[in-house]
Length: 314
Image 1 (tube, helix red, strand yellow):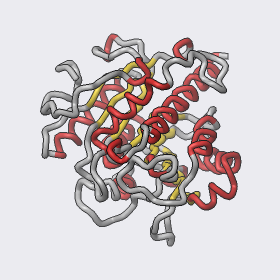
Image 2 (cartoon, one colour):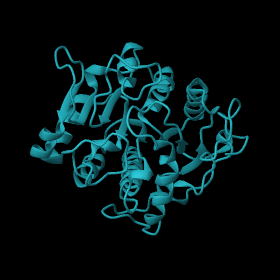
Image 3 (spheres, one colour):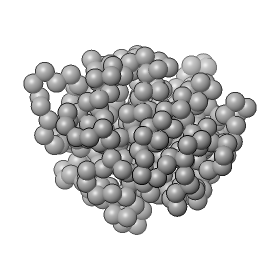
């Protein structure tokens, strides 16, 4: 990314930093203040907080590259309109940081997301490991106060141990810092151990979702978040490894890509203010199916935002 990136002041240009292409071939963003974009796509090529296999630093590149398979469809099925006609989206490139100094990532990412929000735009962010959601939520909460969170994942990420930079503790810290309205937040696809006693989030584990399907899952999500300002964070390991092998901490018996897409599409009417999609590690992928799943889920989210906008204009 060029020096115009608002986060690039204290940063290196790592070999995985430059972009190969923009997501969905959206215009390259160079000036937020003058931009007419309503949503700004960013990449965060950071995986220094992983506890499993590394490689999520290549996630932004993989997702953008896989999105080339989706560009050709002007009016994407099953929607009845072209996204470009109803929502303006740009891609600002990657957030940079000093190699080996994770605090520079934290500082630069918070400034970066704040600059997007202050320009009146909504962030769509590609990780990178799931730690990146913590600095994003700090900027979101600074702007909006504590927000409801819809969290897809195989893990709750509410573990209290770990280091200062840990993708398994970010949600614990977000709650401690008062960034999340836990009484209106929900975690979906969980299938690893967590302490259930006095647990503040509603949890729809993967077995429940697989048994009850997307319609009942959506009912529970919408009942939980209500009309609260809502942030969506999607760890790709929420999907079963059959659909998303390219991730650092795969867990068997997850949800299907079909179910996830139906749930995302069904979020129309929810007060969504931002999204991230994290933990795509292309080195472990096969035929780009994980990157394609991530790109497709992100595109579906943009269609939901466009639909919400169109409904408000009626």
